[in-house]
Each structure stands twice: as C-alpha cells, then as structure tokens.
Image (cartoon, rainbow, N blue to C red; front, side, top):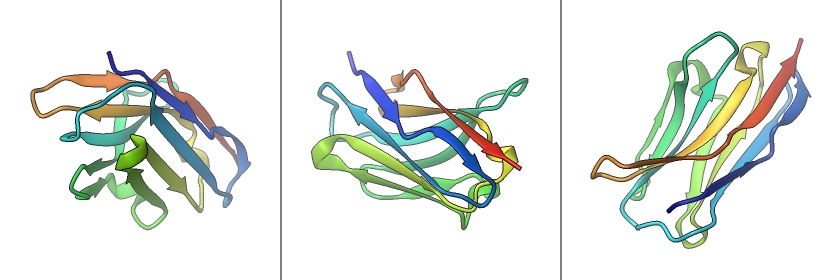
Length: 116
C-alpha cells in the first residue's frame, strides 16, 4: 500500500510563492506518473501538473509559466513550486501516484489559501 504525505501548504498573499512536497513513505514502482491535483470549494478536483518517471511534464493551462513540477526518483518525492499565486489558486492540493496498470494512490491533501 502506497502512502503519500503532502506538506508545504499555507496562507500566502497574492503574488507570493509556496513549495509543496509529497513523499511516498513506502516503496513505489519505478514506472509511474506523479502529480498534483487540486479541489477548490464547490468545484471538482482538477489536474494541476503531472510528471512521468521519464520526466515528461504536463500542466493545466491556468498554471503554465507560474508553477513548476519536479521529482526526485531516489527519494520517491514530487514537488510543486508555485509562484505568482492568485486567489483562484486557493484549494486543497492532492498528491497522486498513477501506475500504468490503472492503479492510483492519493495523499490526504494540503490546503493552499491565497489572499487578495
């Protein structure tokens, strides 16, 4: 069973930065995609960014140029550097590990609040 632990959320003013970290506390297979999703109040969960084990990256259009996803395979850790934050980025951010066989694991989430 993969367990994911997120950290780095908090309250920040618009224009500020935060760095989210997600660490897998148990073994994960090397072939996977790690990513970040978010869910704002009253909205559905949406993809923010993903990165494959080979380094292929995908971002939702609304964060392109502001957010950067990266991973450390040796540490089974994925990061999300968030710059130029906007109030509309306020959400609970969830870490995800996806295996090609279709299995998904989720963290419990970390709250990011951006004040205007």
